[in-house]
Image (cartoon, rainbow, N blue to C red; front, side, top):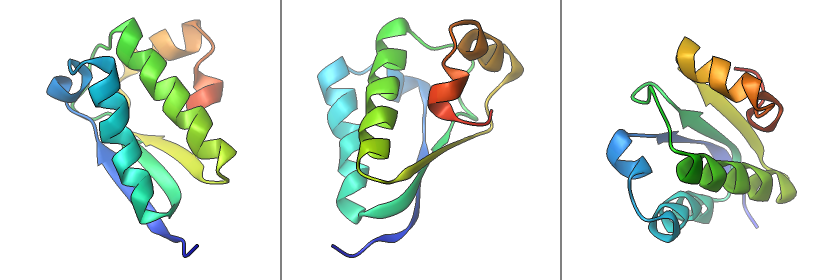
Length: 95
């Protein structure tokens, strides 16, 4: 398996309103590139549903189980507070 560099996923509100299976498939499609790191860009996200958050947590855990790093960028202060409140800052790494 050949690993490429970082893969950036710019999350948008309409991505997070997809059905959870469709959203999961969307995220998993980025793994076909065999990245060494997946970067989740939250610049367009202020709020997130519990379902979308659950899909992102599952995705981050799956990515890490494959030996791929997960990073987050551009997380709003409001979203950081929510993630820290439910201890998900550990799942997504440094916020």
